[in-house]
Image 1: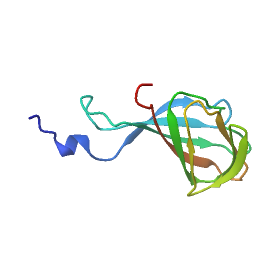
Image 2: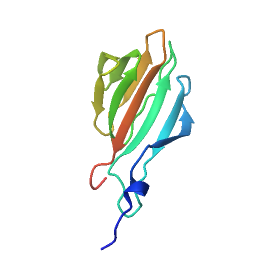
Image 3: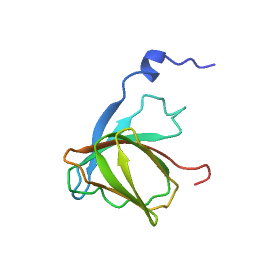
Image 4: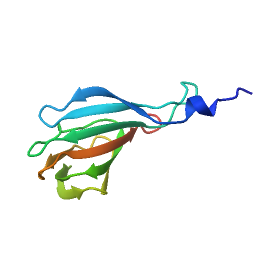
Length: 120
């Protein structure tokens, strides 16, 4: 049986720049410390949206959960809207369009956790 070294597969997660929203701000993807032989069933990103701007309208195969760290904004998904504030969580099924507009005076900062469903 192969052993794993907890010092290598555990610890602080590093975020690297991934891309920028058209107007909103940067997106950073986490590099999880798990080996390729036993990867996590999800990925993580951290992103921000500047005041009076929106992130890009997003539609993708993966399911996704947003955790709002700071700020406030108006969420639009499918044909619904709602307000999200620090501490709120939103979940999106695959292929559901979603976007948030920062309505507050400070940057909106969020963490995304996303994954593909089995067989997708």
